[in-house]
Image 1: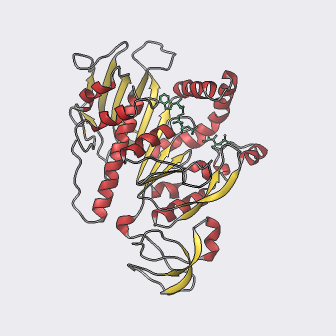
Image 2 (image 1 turned 30 degrees about the vertical axis):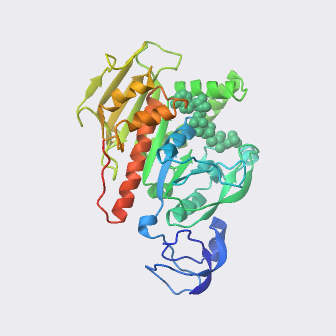
Image 3 (image 1 turned 90 degrees about the vertical axis):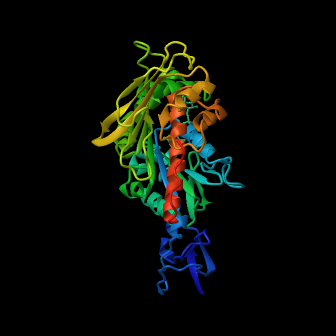
Length: 406
Ligand SMILES: Nc1ncnc2c1ncn2[C@@H]1O[C@H](COP(=O)(O)OP(=O)(O)OP(=O)(O)O)[C@@H](O)[C@H]1O
Ligand SMILES: O=C(CO)[C@H](O)[C@H](O)COP(=O)(O)O
């Protein structure tokens, strides 16, 4: 037994703890405790440096989700957390404007909380929130690494209501940590901590249509102000956000349909799920025959399709020099219960029972994108992440990995 100041490891199986008071500015959860190590793999008798790490099988799995604002991250997160069961809610009794969502298995933190400049600060310096100079990547790295190592942190909160940085909130290491926001793959050190990464790539036309729908209808903004805000963000979006897609293990690309010539309504979407080959614990989904190039129009006797119909394509491709498999869906579903027909023609879905994708889609039929490839592919990626998590846990425990059914 030793008495020391520790950055508290929350897991009982944590192997040891650390004492480096000079690091308190990094927001580790710091307190004076009697320090007891249950299973010590490594101890170093130094007054100010005891290394800490959670027992390997308990280490937090870290997922990164990158996208611009208003591109469907929250909707995706709701689909993902639902796959693990249990409701995701803000920390109980905490800041009502917290951006964090916690469920039994997952904790989703929003990287806006690492803005180093508040709204006024950005205005004074003439930088946008997308600019790396408005974000604290050192703190982001230190805290994500700490959580991954089983250590709770006091994470700052960026308050979107006031535009100010609020007092921090305690984040305990969950089974799965999702870091979502503008820059999860921007900093190489943070990128290295990710067990899996996703980029939501929404084309300008579609982003514009979604922004109008939300910001005009729900937030009372004018068409001109929405256009101006998109234009103002574009240079920094192109410089700092968009390039992250090259690092993503999966990209969901959302484009206008090709089924309606010169469509400018932006309601019918062509959605591409780009899946990197050779990623550990992740086997891309395929249609009919793995590695072949397939074009499929499922609108026949088993799927109701009104104009302009539905078209799937699948095949190998390259993306930023990486080998990928691409599954594409253009069009929209008329009847969600018939989705089972499409699901039954896809393989490597990592479902636990026949029809699980369809069941998830029906459960959240009211979420945006439920009648097209955005919701369909987000659900599939959610199931793939569950599978990846289960494989990581099984391999750490040295148990044979029980592969998913489909
Ligand atoms: N798949 C979709 N299909 C149609 N509209 C969508 C879809 N996903 C999101 N939207 C629209 O975009 C808006 C923003 O979605 P969401 O809140 O999920 O995005 P976000 O990236 O979390 O936004 P922010 O970062 O601004 O909080 C929704 O209110 C909805 O209008
Ligand atoms: O790009 C964003 C990510 O959500 C926001 O614009 C950024 O976080 C700044 O927020 P606000 O506009 O509320 O000051």
